[in-house]
Amino acid sequence: MPTLDDILEHVGEFDRFQKQTFFVLCLLSAAFTPVYVGVVFFGFIPEHRCFSPGVAELSQRCGWSLEEQLNHTVPEWDGRGSSYNSRCRRYEADWNATGVSCTDPLGSLVGNGSTVPLAPCLDGWVYDSPGSSLVTEFDLVCEDSWKLDLFQSSVNAGFFIGSINIGYIADRFGRKFCLLTTIFANIVCGILLVFVPTYLWIVIIRFMQGLVSKGCWTAGYILVTEVVGPEYRRTVGILYQTAFSVGLLVFDAIAYAIPHWRWLQLTVTLPTCFFLLYYWCLPESPRWLISQGKNDKAMKIVSDMAKKNQKKMPSHFEDIKFEEEDCGKQKPSLIDLVRTPQMRKNTLILMYNWFTSSVLYQGLIMHMGIAGGNMYLDFLYSALVEFPAAFIILVTIDRVGRRYPWAVSNLVAGAACLVTALIPEDIHWLKVITACIGRMGITMAFEMVCFVNTELYPTYIRNLGVMVCSSLCDVGGVIVPFIVYRLVEVWHDLPLIVFTVLGLIAGGLVLLLPETKGRVLPETVEDVENFHRQSAPKAKKIYLHVKTAEHD
Image (cartoon, rainbow, N blue to C red; front, side):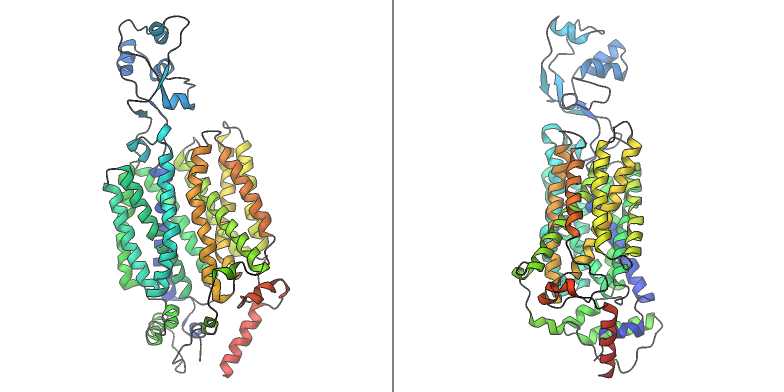
């Protein structure tokens, strides 16, 4: 019996039907951006200082400029308010007292030889920002600054828990059902975020959004790769991730136009309501239908595919067999991932690389958001470099291979972080350039770990292996806000030093993995253990398999 891939060769591997499906799913990929990196704009931290009652009246009476007011009334003011005391402490003084001097107000309050004690910001803060963010609305600064870390960690914790459950739903009830239910849940959570009044509820709903949103993106990735022929799968998968990069550009433009976080949240959520139309626009995955024994429904979709692609399906293709049914005899087990030496090495290195890719990717975005330059332009520059990253991958993976480009991308990311940290603050443009180079490197590494992971595990345990290893991506996402937002209080570029170490180690470890270019995908653990001794090109083995099937 023919396989689905055999039939796709006749009805079109990437023609009009697949291109339409690919386009509408790319819209879904782009819409995932505000959930994944939205903290940059939703949680923007503007310059701030304590609100001190009476200061505005005194400034008006004395005729001070804003800079003079800050010099006289803000502790350790250096022109930028970059110290902890200038942001989180105020003078414990009565600025409404009579006889306060306009030339030396502090001296007139305490007398010569004394200092004014400092106190916490009991009356709130003043923010130098025309818009609003979570930080300005809930005063997530100083002693409460960790709450912003928790806001971002909560969505990654949702990713971690949700990806397992959503993966089960996609395998049990189908890709299309999974997509529609998670799209609906994501819309509900996105709208609730606009209206809930308290920080606690925002964190809870953000966690719930994480439960469904990454699973939704992943289900789209699975569906788009399952409706195309094998020759197009890798390219379509990379371009699906590139659609996320397009989403970064659109999100940046919307955030620039709408600097108020609740209106921004509403603006990026409402268009996703149109994704519910996917009920009529998207097919179910024929591969999933075959795996469930629903061959009639699968053939109906294949017939629609042939019609849309203006191709004729050969009459002898009356049935389809499931390509991996022979492998079902082996039941996947977690212990299989570490039972043998090569499998154990692959698993540990892949887990570390998923973790590192997430930490560096999200961390560089967060760090750029608090770097002190123009947040919107810096975000734009760093998003643009993702496009050459995807192009380099497409050009190199089938010519050079996977291992060396992947290792180099990690090493470049780590080295760029180190150089960025060592460049002085007053050469901001150069810091932005090197940070963008690091962003391009880690984008390449992130996209490569996605598909190399599938090439290093045998068929019967491939899905489990990807799920377990990629879960470290979400663990990294939970940790990275604390790495960035806490360490910058010690030294602004200290997170970059941490990223340097992680990236360089990841690049070195990748070189210990076997090269998978031109290799047949392993079917058993024994194949993985003997991977380094394989030399037969994948294309030849597939050719022989197809020829044999035709003679059958």
